[in-house]
Length: 350
Length: 169
Image (cartoon, rainbow over all chains, first blue to last red; front, top):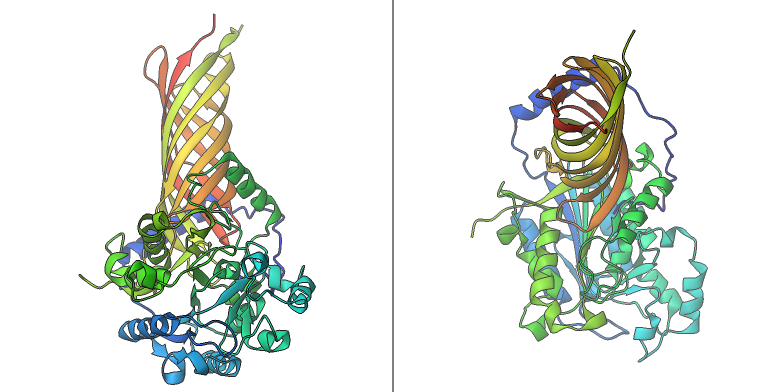
């Protein structure tokens, strides 16, 4: 997640002109260094894994705790160290535990390490109230969302305030409790900013989790509510991408410690689904994400990166799941932009 | 007395291959291979029989390959579509200097994400006439990409192009 909410980006006003000879020599030197090669490896890392199927006050789900357990097992096999000695499931998925886990990670994670945060459970994105009518959201909740307009909470790519609900959240009846027992877009950004790892990866299997992807200077040609009909790049997409260049500042060195790569199961205005209706033992997105070490190594270099895992899951959902859904029910995972692609897993031979 | 030569109109097909050096704020620099196919039109006006001012414009279709993996990360590959304009001055069957400005639309590989950037290029060129209506041009362009997703992106490449010339009556 490239975070805009915590920093101001400095707009570049000029072009650095280097003497051609220096550029040429530097390019040759870097080519030599790159050609020497070394094992890219998988930087040793720490992980925080949360899965909430049982909720105290709202409808429970069936698979997120199993999803988190499976993800935790995969991460341990890949060499990650789990913070909290295991996934935080159901009643253990509280805000106090989350804050404690991130504090522990902040103390342990070295700059050369990787950090991985996974969440499976209920999610929410502002603007989706009409889809929740039984029970409906309260006026107090609507007023709270209105108070967040224009703040850092809406700084994501789609300008939507999004939430991940922990075990005690109760957005329909107790707004203060929900504010306390949920993770908001800017709150997660703030927690990640405290982690010193250069490589930070966030994966969320929750409805509307696309709202957590920051405004990273790239334009997503997949609309916030994918219906399966948009293919390719339109003239409007091209114009929007060009406009973004003019309005978005250059990379700010001060933001370097806050950027993270994010994969969300769905867009800010989309749902993500449990998988039992499709014969899957995990949530739909997590089911395919778990296959990434086996099937997503597109360039066969022995490693699966964020882009490769995302591309595999998105393609699988598009081809195997979305034809079973119609219209607004269709969804696609989303991924954050930025020039750097992190290694997620060592590929596993089938 | 120097003869006044008519302007030529040319169709240009070229290819550029380059090494792009990319630097992020918190990651080491890396080198990415760049390839581009260019199609354009150009014109040459000359008041001298062996040299002249040239102007060209066209489109480009390109690919920037992902960098090598290094310590758990690499730079993403890009697919690019560009509009470019170039001008310069060159001797026939000799040296010249060309400058190019380019506006590009880029997509990160394996994603649906678009961004754009502008690029400036400058380099010497050598022109060889292949016949009455064709000439071959080689150039070594140095270029700088003004991008918002990295701290710096610049490089050096080799460009080859064939120009098919038509002299208006």
